[in-house]
Image 1 (cartoon, one colour):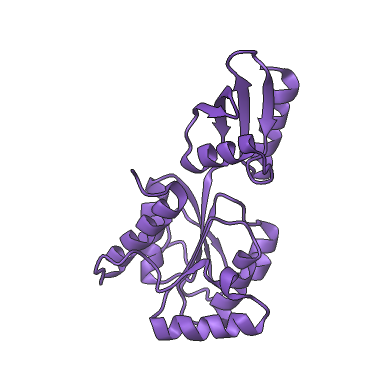
Image 2: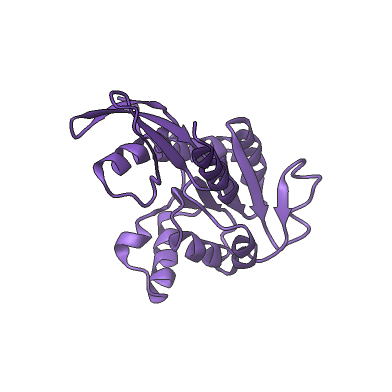
Length: 226
């Protein structure tokens, strides 16, 4: 690997961006592809590989490329230190996510309730301005409080994070959409929010709801298996 290629890969990792190294298996031609911004056929193939964390050979416009994926870690931002958040933070960490819990209510977001989890007592827009969302980020809003959830959802909708979910009934979600629509978001953008959150598996307990959320995050990230 060329030194400049290695430096570019390391820089992308530091900045939290996915990058794909594409090598022509016939000619040996080597190039780096930014899957988030490259709209070419090779860029589309690189995005698919990055989404599934799969380094593989692909045919693109008559050429065979080997795509080596270099992804930043998965990132889960949980808004609201609720009981569901306790279960979800543990499950997500096991599956490889770096977990961030944001809740200005200091009595909820405590190290005792969230051992080993990154905690912030700032408002979501403040915390996310310091540690921005990326293509490997998921945002889960759990507070039921518009003062806490809506600013986080606003930041998420303006980002390229791969998953946005919000707790609440269909009625609650409709009211949420109306508030966000009044702030200039169109229906296509609002459709990015999964609400009610999680796959419909009949979940009732906080742990079961956490399972349904993590499952929905996974299928959004990876796509259903053929």
